Image (cartoon, rainbow, N blue to C red; front, side, top):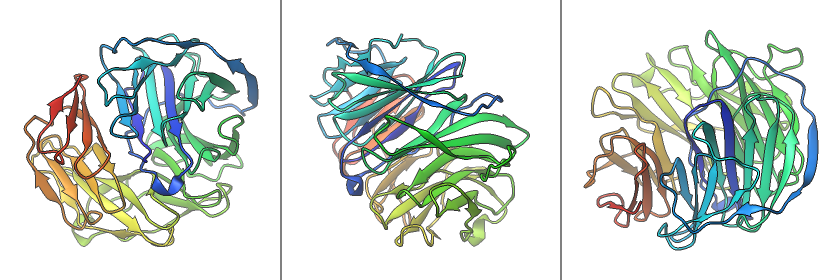
Length: 392
C-alpha cells in the first residue's frame, strides 16, 4: 500500500483529491509543487450537506491525464480536467467515477492524495473561492457524501495518518516573499474540518507569515511540520508543532558544508511509520540540486544525506517518489536517479525514453513504476526505470 500526493497547474477553480486505507505504517505519499491562492481571508465555518448518490459512470478512457497514482499493480486513480477515473486492470481501461455535481473543465486545478483503493476525498474550490466542497467516498467512488468549508484560497497540501485524521493546508495569497496559510484538521474522515493554525499577520496566528509555503504534514495528532522556501542562504524553512498545530517554532536542521551559500525549498515530511520519515528539499542552485533529510526518531532529529546535483545547467528536481524511507526515485528532467539508502548514494538510470516533461513519478516497488508527462502520456516500467512502455 502507499499514498500519493499530486498537484497540477494553477487556474481559477480548484479541485483536489485523496484516497485512503487503514494502514498508516505502509503509506507512501509523493510530494508535489504548490499552487497559488487569493489575498483575501475569512473566518471559516464548517457545514454538512446531504449525501450525494449520483456518479458519472463510463468505461471510456479519458483523452488525457492531469494526475495519476496507482495503489497496486492493477488498481489506481487518475484525474483529468476535474474528472475522476479508476482502473482495476493496470491502466488498460478506466471507469469515470466523478461526482455528478462536478462539471469537468480545463480550468480546474487538481490535487490528489491516496491511501488505498476504496476511500477517496475530493475537494472543489468554486471560482469565487469562498467555499470548498469536500466529497468523500468509501466504496471506490460508487457513492459520495459532501461537506463544505467556508474559507478562501487554494488547497496546497493534504495528508492523512489514517482514514479518520487528516490535515489540509490552504494557500491564501502571497506578496514580497511572504504567504498566507491556514491549516485545517479533520478527525472523522472529512465529515467536519476545523481551522487549527494560520499565519501571524492575523492576530492570534502562530505560523510565520514570511517565506513561501509548500504545506504541512503530521505524523500524529500532536506532532507536525510546516515547510516552504526561505530567502536566507544556508537556512531551511522548517517549523514544528508539538501541540496539534496551536503553536509553531523553527526546528533547526544541519546544512551540508557544500550548500551554505544556497537557498532551499523544503516540502512536507513523508512518514512511513511513527519513527521513520524523510523531508525532500530542493536546492536552488545552477544546476539545481536535491537533498533528503532523514529521521529515525519521529522527527526529533533530522540528518541530511548526500546532496544530488543536476547533470545539466537547466536541471530541475521537481518530480520524485519514495517507496520506503530508503528506496526513492527522482529526475532532473534528463536522467533518472535511484537511491537504496535514503539519499546517501544515488544510482544513475538511463531510460529508453526522454524524461523531459515528466510531471509525476509513481513507483510501487523497486521495479514497478509509472511516469506521467506534461504531454499527457503515461508510461509503465517493470525493470526499475530502464525500460518504459507507453500505456496511454
